[in-house]
Image (tube, rainbow, N blue to C red):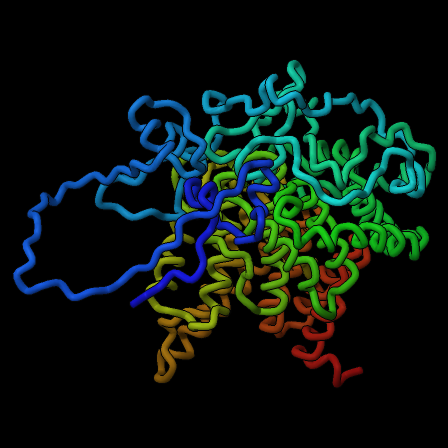
Length: 576
């Protein structure tokens, strides 16, 4: 006999959502201000059927229809359904006889304007805050949370009536009412330039803090917008961290303090800014953020997700030689709290891709698998025609898959390696022509140049090509087809070493000659951490070390640990 120990509430069960079993009201029902009724407990008994049991004969071609309340009305009348996973014209349903897969093209699940509907009707008696105009970055007070109107109160049910509270909908400037995607409550960013999301009242101000009064804090905000946000918007055509995040920071002290903390730390490393200022903003931010990670509603807040991403960048600057996992746990919590379809579009998707690249950085440096569960995210692993941004993200996901294959607990499975190798070759063959460098010059050996000069026209091309090359390097290192013994082993090893060195040279050349995109040189440093020890010519070693030094001196991304590892591998330590 097999018994089901706990039963979620009926609303969560009807909508195929995970219930936290809280009483008297679960977190999802409390967040959406919905009546929480307990589901019917049941037990499943396994019994032996009689030998003469008669069974109905069925055809092979069967179609199963869920006739539960709500879905049956949708099937009969074709009306909209509140069930998050109900089929719609924008989400492909699984054909009969097939199985679901996470390899779903982005175009197949992206929200369309035809599937957008209003969820806040006039009979609710409440409407979101009207959008405000942000015409100047201005200056800001030193203590945002001390400003009148900054109320930190105990959480209460938000005014939105959506079932999941997975994302905060942005209001339509013309009506002041929030738009939510029919099935997944993903944001509709029509009128994006003038929108700002209405959030839970416990973490937001009633009025924005602009105009500001402290010039030093205005400098911090401007530094983030002009110099640091581009680190995060690499593959985001909407540039959410440059445009939308500063707007939301005006009413979210947690987000604003995260921005201040990152900018102050970066300026203190590359200039003479007060080194203790970042600590003050960081502590003020964490004082309110950490307790909220235990709340079902707040961990679904995309603005707090963005704040966590920014704090993660700060940790990458501060803690390169110790534990890099501090806010990665928070990022995993934010990703796990969302319906996969709800991550599509808006600030949530932008934050997800940054968080994935951050996790990839940690996994590469520490030689571990990626912690974010990509199976619960609708990532695209196809090679179908798509935008350049999507092709770049495909390369990022592919490299994450390679990391999981090479450093996973099961070891390198031959079939998985072959699958990843095939995809790498298909990505290289099918990628758009825009991923071809706009300029290429081989390294001049007479001038002791170690790297070719490679130019690209956009950051997404740089990130896509570099992550693809990182994947090629690891696949070559972990090639299970390399003989372990015999005369052919040395030949295979030599060929593998040459391929790895060529990929790393191009990786560094892309980073050095596209300095307008700092993450390019960050990614080159990741490649050096993987295989820089394989270079045995002194001039090559000096060139690789120079990349690491530039990364730390120019961009405050400390590479001291990797520098020391390379020096030791090259035998430089004994010379000192």
